[in-house]
Image 1 (cartoon, rainbow, N blue to C red):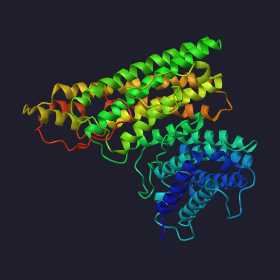
Image 2 (image 1 turned 90 degrees about the vertical axis):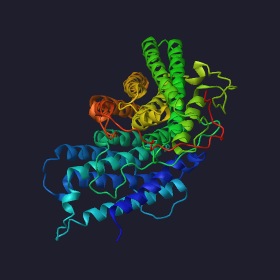
Image 3 (image 1 turned 90 degrees about the horizontal axis):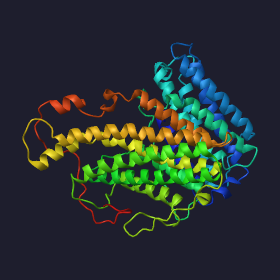
Image 4 (image 1 turned 180 degrees about the vertical axis):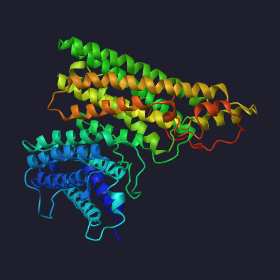
Length: 493
């Protein structure tokens, strides 16, 4: 018997192919397919059906989840407006392009999944209905809708007027449900809460639009690594994050210069403040990278997906700001930046470049969360290397924990500073404005909840207990990467 989780897994797989198709060189040709807008309308209709069922509790009278249901109603209304802008939904089963084909397949799988859920609410009520109508389940379904609405908005961006107007409506729907787009325990364990998109390798000569999409995909992958990383990987990724923030600092300064040229003095001043906060974030990352370097002598390119994703982030961001199309950092690299008027001819272009840098810096902030989870292993490893048997942890462990706390707070300041000026620069009609607003909302929410107990959630002990309780040295459970022969894509010094 097919389950709801299996159907959503099929839908997610096809959605990943839709995202992949959006980043191929022939995406504009595929977007000219006359059936694409109709298929996107069918996709929106399915999302609206989910919103309707969540808002009514699958027909169960209102209980204590009024906020969730109200959110679903608002989201559903926006999605239906987007469906109207897209025109009549597709009724045929033939497609001409991979983009249209995978969008149709995802719509069908999502629709079948919803039919499976509603089948439990027949004349003979199933015991599963209690789980389906639970508030946590509704939140989980809203998280899924958020992800699908964002992808649908990106597809709509490639359509011609008037269908392209659906993009902003779909992003607004995603913004409405973003309040519930936080990691929670899933009552239906078959639903994958953190589906990692497929990697999109950087290409030489990418335009800004595919570069932004690639950075967005990489940021999602960095936020949810799917494997345990080694100390070598932590060191490598710390270095990559420092380089990413250095490039972000350079981009913000170039944009500030361009705003001066366009007589936008207030925006120029805000961008310089953002550049300064980003520079301080880069320095914090460098301190942590040096600490990790002291724990391992391996300085090659780790063969992990996390390190590859971090490298992709550096390459894409660097190729936006530096004049060399195939730019990659290294000791012999020429760091010649594009003139401000080439990087951002208009304020709208400046908002797009700023949004790109913002996504990259937010990805670094997400990296810090996962780095902190490895600090206990780093402390144990440090003691084992020094062959010390004293009961307390070394001072280096306390230093590393303090540096991560400082980094997390500083990275948040950089995201907020750059995000606020980018939001002010973006025109109302730009879909990126909604995406920037989502990032600012996430960052503000994280700041409100970033208490010590939350920050140490991944540790076996709280920081106070870990730093004060006697502990016996034991070998680190963090694996070492032993092969360092592959050439790194950026300078490791």
